[in-house]
Image (cartoon, rainbow, N blue to C red; front, side):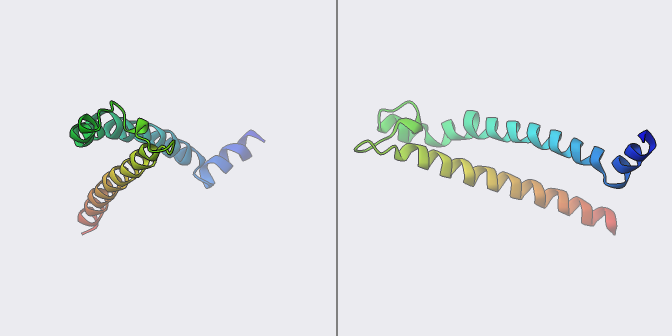
Length: 99
């Protein structure tokens, strides 16, 4: 039974998948920190000062918290851009090593 389980793990790449999930989770934390703690304050600081708000999520009009949507949109665009650049770099390295 143990041998079958080990064979299952090897055949279906379960260990590799587990490693990928763990690394992916940590990469998510890193990218979120870069976006939330570094890029968003740098990009939005002048606009937030003009609006006299210290956090984009507090922007609202008539009770509608449009700042949350704006923040999430900017977060998505920055993360998508970083993932694109990372993927492009990795794929470039793959094509170089295949030649």
